[in-house]
Image 1 (cartoon, rainbow, N blue to C red):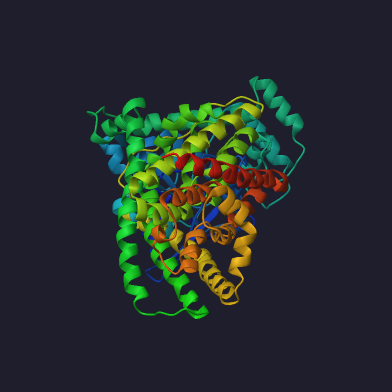
Image 2 (image 1 turned 135 degrees about the vertical axis):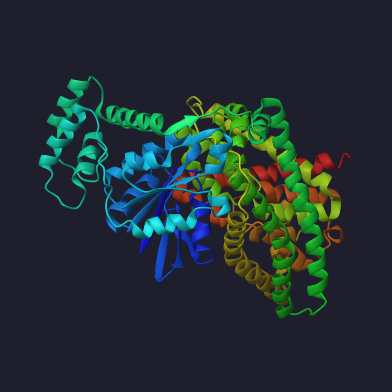
Length: 610
């Protein structure tokens, strides 16, 4: 059988999905979409159950890719059961989506999640009455502790019929629904659901009902879409008032912590320390693991031929890349799962407005610390084209995890953490200045911030580790073949004496303007493929991982700054082409390349003064 998990964002669907499917899951994209698709299987009793985690959405109005995916999957694929995951601490907001699922007339079970948090907040819900009012099973669960999941599975397996009760709205709306139903000839969709969607103006097919819609709007003196939404909320409020009782408790530790983390002063200071702490942890952990692995692996095999270059590439990938990537993804997963990302967006809103965008932009910018590709794709959450363009431009300038590898392994290992933080601070200042300029030259006004602030919660170890595993494996599958192939290519160039001519061609830029060794011109070419190749290829060319033996401190800093700012990698370029087209992509690539080289030369000469 097939079970689809549906619900709002941040209600615990992923925790339930991971708890049910364990390791028997795979992550991909929906056909023709860039949105992630999570699918897994489990064995329960004598059944094999496929579980599909649908995107987190708030309605089925077909105003976004996520809403289209969920609607089309339920209507066309017809899963055996839908498990609607509902946040018990925000019953009124969540049940609006539940009513729309009920309208679709598919077998439905409610997973009332975060019951422990609801109790802490003094929220008491009458489960039996809620079940009677909705006409479907309601199962209380605490997904993060796996409580109630067996009962949830049992209810899902037994649920083989559509909801027993039909949600009824006002007399005016019901009259209009009945008249529209009389005109529907197709059997492909539930008649009542399709009638409501036609009145809303968000139906998957077109039927002429303008006279009925106009008559309804004349009768209610407002638009049909707004009226249907208000009717749903009226029904939801009646249900919530009937089943929910709130006993105001003393402020919990979580609420006090939340107030501290969202306060403009203490929250901003915390945000700064969080990210300094993240870089410090990555720095110390990465250095220790990298040095240990390098000493261990390089002692096994020595040589000066092309084969050794291949081995060096593998060692560089293992010892330089992974020790910094894995802890970064782990810490990023913890921030996402605790709900802190939304608080970072809230705190950043005032600063983001200086750039002509709002605090929600901090989410794709933070994603860009992992990889610029999801950062660029994540800019779709920005409402206006102007805000999206500025955010995409800024996201390509954010130092991704590959650049973190370069900074940590080049500057961090040789010069120390203080210089790492200095470089990042400089890049953030540059990013702010360029964002401010983009804001000034791009017409339009900044819009306000409206977003959900999920509850602070303990991170799920299983969710975070699985996210880290999948992200790391994706990185390895893409990066390692390129790193090894690049090392082999450099070894071949070296073997046939082609390195020097290539380096000489770029020497007016590298030696003449940037004041760095001529061979860096070769590795900067590889950086267009992936940024971490700049440092791994450099180590391969010189046959050492000690950058201090290759460059002086000013040269290291100049080289690293150029790598941090110059052209986006090929994967990011592909994402840019998809999102903003070839012309704007070319403008970003050319600007960042020339800007990085120009600034790098100025930076090198400033360093000579100290």
